Length: 200
Image (cartoon, rainbow, N blue to C red):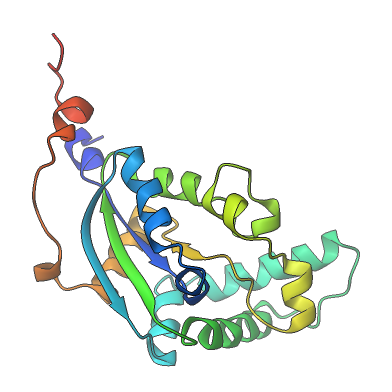
């Protein structure tokens, strides 16, 4: 394992339109800053439907995975899925996401630091706000559920997107940011977080 690479891991976070409308930008950024991660890129943007589709399908298995998870979620509730074809269900999810993610501006960010992907996902909480633990961003700041969003025929309003793994993060970052938009600088706190001989 390349420890230096682990210390410089990057991940993408997008504050979705509901997070902006709820005026939670500062609170969300504060949560990640307090963890010790470093903000290395930040922009506000208006996503197009095409950009949203590219973003969610950057992982070629996304549709299959989302469709299968949707089928399992229906079956777990004792309900019949609207289709047993994962791709049909994923296309419906993607259609809702396009409407949701283009309903207003988003804030895209790149965070860097040790285990950045895992740390961000832990702070963010489970995809469904109702299932998110207290203390996570989704658990503390929103109250939506799959049950209500499915009934309403829309995406679950969960404030944030966070990359699922380092490979996905790299592809998503390349989609939203150019290399010139990623900043390389050092924080004083990095001495405490990363220098092996600190305090020795």
